[in-house]
Length: 523
Image (cartoon, rainbow, N blue to C red; front, side, top):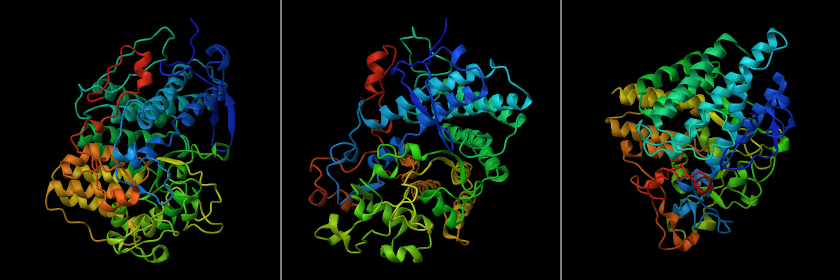
């Protein structure tokens, strides 16, 4: 029987293929596999549809609102006030629907690539390496998609018996209508098997490092991330150390870090292990990262409906320096990245009669750059169309810090945090001093909050580390004052760490078509 790319959640449609410097059209499902895909170039186009499908801003955008990264902006027109910002989460919410749908849509294509890679006859030795590399990329992406699904939809990442999602380890047949959820154990098994095979293939068929394609260091970094989620810190640290010590990717300098989030023109081996490339053809307000928080552009004139939360701002600018001063004075480059120069910082915000208007903390991250500058994003030469950073080398240092805490080595944990701070401050910093494991977990959680703000990490970080650190949602009272932001008075101002909402619901559209699926508790 000839097979078509298919998954139960949605019907297949024609997509565009994202390459680093062009878009190529391809219509998976329009032809049978034996006709449509006969060469490595065909297979590459199909794999590129997977990359394109994974380029989804919902994680960065919705996580920032649902947790504590944003406050209500002065130009807010009602966005989030009755939904994500007050912790509304249901089977029809954007975050679970987007993560589930896009991941499985991508997996439908990824599994095609894996199934076809060994069937295509290579033209020559170089083409044989290309085919093997494409398969290794697909295996790595399959592991990434499964890890993403499990992390959000499993109630307990450390419990092998807890349910994750549907195990998409093959091309599904049209007649398969019932697909039950598999356990975390089954997910971890597939993830590590895929990554092990990918690493072996990458090693035997080396190609030049390029962060816009799944690569051996992304595969090893995913193993570190997966082991961290599982709580297996011995293995997590082994793979994190491998990436830190042996990959070509190093922590960005301050200038490179600015370029990373403004213009994407940092050196190829600076900071980024893997990113999803954005092209000019993909530039529109529905998919650009910055339009998750502003209507036009990341500036006070760009109609921001969300701003940097006061609590997050206070982490990087505790002295309430003016935005103009921040550009030259603040020592931590992450403050430059987070707070736009058009911001108005009100040092007396706590007693302001109109906090919403007097304290304007404009989100700067994922902006564009002024022509000839690599510092501030007031107008965008790249139309604010930044690449989506999926894994950065700083994450490996954070994993190492967690592993050292788990091993009882609080000094080692502090050293890993110091390495990141040294790079972000541009000079050697005093290592933090942790006197207890709880304090150390809290230190890591706080550092990750600053380092990965508006990149989609915060929800999972609180889910994983909140109880260990005795820290949860952290909003300044000003970010939730009904008198200034007009949020319903009865709305909750916090989400307890015991809430079932730290696990996302299975989307309703999956439940409607899949009688074998089981909903998560509480929904």
